[in-house]
Amino acid sequence: MLTYSKRTDPFTGEEFVEVPFKGLSLTEQPVFNKGTAFTEEERHALDLIGLLPEGITTLEIQKRRTYGSVSAKPDDLEKYVYMLSLLDRNETLYYALVLEHLKEMLPIIYTPTVGKACQQFSHLYRRRRGLYISSKNIQLVDHILDNAPFRNLALIVISDGERILGLGDLGAGGMGIPIGKISLYVAAAGLHPAYCLPILLDVGTNNEELLNDPLYIGLRQQRLTGDAYDAIVEHFVNAVKRKFPNVLLQWEDFGKNNAFRLLDRYRERILSFNDDIQGTGSVVLAVLLSAMRLKREKLSDQRYVIYGQGQAGIGIARQIVAGLKREGLADKEARSLVFGIDKDGLLVEGMPVSEEQKLLVKGRSVVAEWQLDDPNKISLVDTIRNTKATVLIGVTGQANAFNEEVISRMSMNCELPLIMPLSNPTSKAETTPEFALGITRGKCLIATGSPFQPVKINGRERNISQCNNLYVFPGVGLGALISGTPKVTDEMFIAASKAVSELVQDGELKDGQLLPPIQNIRRVSEEVAFATAREARDSGLGQRADDEKLRSMVQQAMWVPKYLPYRYVKKASILYI
Image (tube, rainbow, N blue to C red):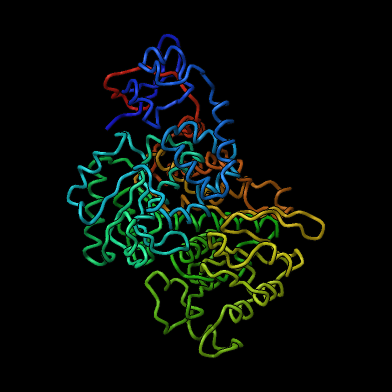
């Protein structure tokens, strides 16, 4: 393993990077490669003469050339493939380009395009990135982790590929998600790419189409479950703690049956969180806090219906309940305002539910006087009508689930209902902003899970806020690492929600915008990281530094993609300062 090392010359004050390679090897290392931007001095000192064309260019020129190439691709999947190939040859250029064209690039490097890429991952596979740990090689996990490119690792994003976005079990194809999530950590929060590692935990797949595909690159067996599955995860976590004791582990796109269990089992044992559960809940709470500012109401004035009770729905419910309790409500009172609907209807006593779903199960007495279309099942429309819901959240992956009747019912309950179709990719969204705004004649607030274009309604253009976890998880991760906390708490996610909401300007709120502009994601991540580190300090978990020191630590940790001078060191061993 290498150690990424940035240093400052004590005499000249020049910042430089120590590189352990010369010649061809240097040009083939994407973290270090500058392509045509190596200076004349570096070309001589680092044995690059003749390996590069004579013309020396700048990062600005490289961005212009590369942007022209990606723009010429015929569709977003081709653009995704091109950007991934760029990541594999020059990471500094990749992130500089992403940040310069952030709003355009996000749907390409992550949702919704990453979903298509995961579905075709085996067919698109070109170059190794990250590590693959499987049930066949788990006994060699310590040796596998030794193959991590850099020893000063700060972040691992791991998935077992069971629940990729709204697309289900994609097996080894799920590796596209950890790769993409790390791109977002670097772009948004400025974690250096050398500190980040994607890992795919391959325990098989129940996707028969993949198992029958001769090009499939994953383990060809049915997905492991039960004790066999748990033993593999235990081996993995213990190995990570041995090799990288201070790393942050993010669980990503695990199936519902495992996601909550693994989060609860390991959150006290290793610095970790699950973005699908906690990050999703936190960004939804940020939207709700913004909406309350606009409506001049409190969270406790609302009635919430969450359509879909998988890990995202339950994570959202947990965060809403936590927010209500912060306003002073008792636990039972807070839960009474939140209604969860699964495939069999409203969660009520007597229904088969998971342990996590018990949070929202209603007693039969609560619904005894309700007017129902079908006494055997309490539907979404029944729930909206009888609860007088003011907030509707969809995490079902069912396109058009919020039809005209559903939207109309919401508009009858209050002057400005909040409607949140959060499923992605776009094809899975429960409704579209254009449809919802059209039915309500512009009298609703809306935030979506996938990106949508602005909608013109009543002579005005409404920008659509994408309820993107990007607003939360990179900053929470950076803040947790900066603070030195041994665990990520629910209170840290609440602090993150407040920080995001407070960045929405009053003028933006009046235009129906409920989250800050995505172009400001670095500022958002800085504020979220600061809020997270401050919460860690105030709760006694993080280091004792005053606000000014914490702010400075966050800012100094945020890498800006630019080329620094290189100096060859045969065996670089000094940690990044």
